[in-house]
Image (cartoon, rainbow, N blue to C red):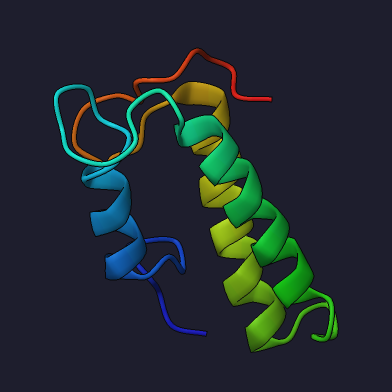
Length: 90
């Protein structure tokens, strides 16, 4: 596949995170962990129909990896600032 600078995460998803989880921003500060847990579950469900190694599988795995990393570290080079929820997000 081709290189994806956002790790297969849409710009809209990144924008939503930038407007939701960062302290002093609109959205749901302090509630981002549960939202991320839901987003991760959705990405995992969306991955099920794709055979391992196919484009659809790899694209959803990129999103799964992105969300998992953000839940652990609260940071991403694509997200402005740090998460406002306690880490790690379980």
